[in-house]
Image 1 (cartoon, rainbow, N blue to C red):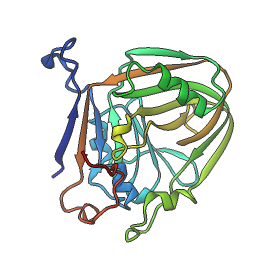
Image 2: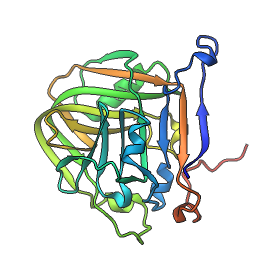
Image 3: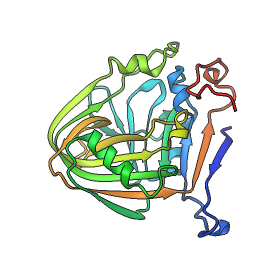
Image 4: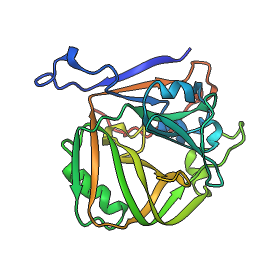
Length: 256
């Protein structure tokens, strides 16, 4: 049984009554980035389960067997050779973020020269740097660099950083598609990448992966935002061996 161990709820009670919150207007987050940093690469939710949690999202598959992208209700797997396929509903997921995307605001960014530029400008224009946002960007790229994932041995517990050094990287030119991602506040660094985690899927479904770098074809980019007032964290079944081990944590070392 999957157990819900933590829900982080941030409710603006002055403007939105508690009972008016949409049941599905939240980010469903499975496992944690700290788990991946400590070599936990198995989970017990399926692609079919994830589709019930959102029509938009990202993640990976058990034992890092490909990158995961959820867009418009479909879930895709980017194989280690860069090919894109519709994911089998029975495939298991060790890490992922999913939500039902509802555009609440559009932000127009000017003079975007690369991904670092995009992220910097977007942070400056976010309604709040302390809340969670689902971020959707449809754009064309003169060039883009995407990361993949290769299946690891089930007994290998080296952290994700080790495998990212030799991950497959796909370089593409003149490609149009969608950036699927999330803005995560700094205090969520143990749960996911901060400030942004983006995957990319081309319109023709021929290429996808984790966004590393890119040069947009147009210096003006429109970003769609969906602010989320609730963040639900689900951890794998309590029998998951990786969660039994002692981890090195990303938690700030300070006393209060």
